[in-house]
Length: 126
Image (cartoon, rainbow, N blue to C red):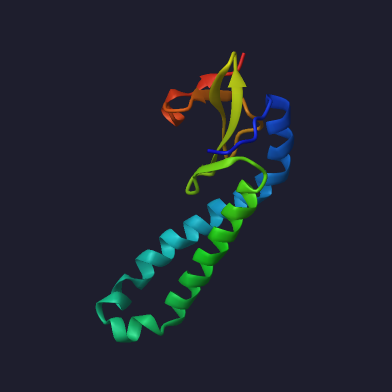
């Protein structure tokens, strides 16, 4: 668990910096999904499939995804779902830990959830 606590304002300030990285991450994840389908036939003949351009591109894309996740998490937030660009920011709410929650495409952080509730437990920040 990260040790940095965010206020809503601090998390929104960080969000301005990480949002372009999250957009890239979501795009790379979509590329992986498409590429995985494309290389499936290559995997039936592993000897040919391993040395293909498609598998080489897939490895490069995975490396790019790992680098993006590291850059995003270096800001103190947590990447919860790279496919949809879901981030959590640790916060204190009346003495208990919660996550401020943001999903790619949302304008700002408007939701939170308890640590163990996850995305489905999101509640609006009032």
